[in-house]
Image (tube, rainbow, N blue to C red; front, side):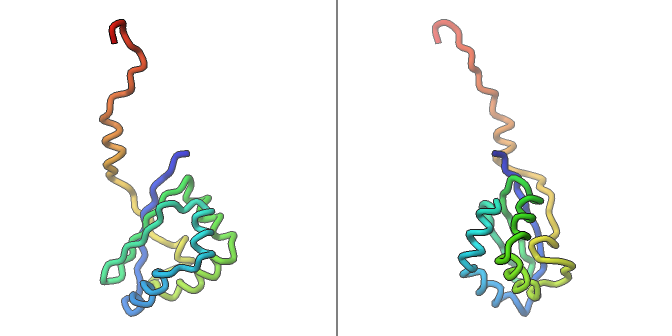
Length: 125
């Protein structure tokens, strides 16, 4: 199973930062389980003091992971609850984010440097 890395940004309203952090200190257990089941792996959020939110997760398919979440009641409730925290949203926070292009990954470049395994041996090896 090959995972793609997804990184995105959203802008929090500065006056909402502390409440946003408070709510994410203990996300609803049902939401946590649903995210994992929908294929959101290694999911993290990072926040700057000015409200810039950076999200990162790994999944087999961004479209499929978003579609699976969109089909759940817990996600509809969570997104409605979170929508007021953000500036300039035209949709749900988990679908209206600005996705970033990955330009460097250490592990990918190191793997590209490694020689292909040699499965042939010669006498005396």
